[in-house]
Length: 420
Image: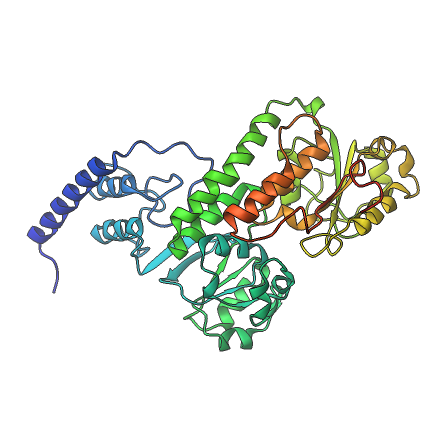
C-alpha cells in the first residue's frame, strides 16, 4: 500500500524536527575543508564525512531548495527521497544494512552489513583491520600476508594464493561476506566467478594521496569510524601534515634530485606510482618523473640525470624478522660499485641509503616517509623515524614488539658502517 500525501508531510516534519534536535545536541560546526570527497553514497554535501549536515543537504534537495549532488542518493536507487534521509541517519548511527561506495578501482559497490567474515588479498589492509580490532573476522589471506611475523596468528589462516591469481575455489569454501583486494586487473574475473553473496572491494592502501579516504571507507564498512579517525588524526595527520608543511615551502632548487630503485637493479618509479608521490612528500624531486609505471631504465640515464640521493628498496633483506643490516649493506655496496656510478653526486657524497620497501605502503607509510626525509633532508626535520615506528606498533597496532631488540628497516652507513 502506498504512502499518502499526509503521511509524507508528517514524515518530512518529523525528519526536520530530528535534524533540529541533532544540530542542537551536536553543536555542529561547518566541516573543515578537505582535499578529497568521501566516495560513499550518503555524503550529500560532498565533504570528507557523513553527518547531520548531509541529512540537511538531502532535505534541501528533496524540497528543491538545492541542486542534486552525486552522493545524495544514499540508497543508490536512482531517486532522492525520504528513504535516502533514513539511510543517511542509519549510516550516522552505524546501523545501516548496506553501504554503497566507490572503491579504488572506480567501481560502485554495495556492501551488505554487518561484515562478519572477510578475506584479505590486500596485504596492506591488515594494519587497518588490526587497528579496528576486527582480526577475528579475517578467515583467509593472500600468500604475502603469511610472511607477516609480528602478527603470528595470520600465518595460521588459510592461504589463498596471490592477489593476481587467487584460489577461487578456496575463497568460496570459506563463505566470506567480503573480499578486499588491491589488484584491480582481477576485479572483473572475481565479480564474474564468485557468488553474489561475496562482495569484492578494491582498496589498495598503496598511494599516499588516497590512503586516508580508503581508511575512512573501511571504517564505515566495519562500523569503526572512531578507530579510523583515531589513526588519521593522531598518527597519519600528526606526522604527514608536519612533513607537508616543511616541504611545501621549499623551492624547487632546495629539493634534491632523488633516484629510488625497486626490487631489481635499474627498476625505478614513474609519476603514476605511490613512490613518486612519496619522493615529493619527503621534499625531493624524482629524476624519472617523466616516465610512467615502474620501468627498468638504462643505467646511463641514471648517470646523466645525476641524482643527489639514491634510495634502494629492501624486501627480504629487511623487516621484523631481520636482526642485522648486513644484507642491506650489501645492497648499498652493490650500488656504490656499479660501473659508471662513481661520478654520480649521491655516490661521491655517500648519500646512498637502503630502506625497507614495505614501510611505504599501508597505514605505516608515514614511517617510511620519515625515513626518506632523513635521507633527503638530514638536518631539516625534527623527526625520529624509529620513535614514530614504535608509537605505531604500540599505540595503534597494539603489538608488544620492541624495535630496540628486533627488526631492521633502514641502512644509514654512518650509523651501521659494519652492517650490524
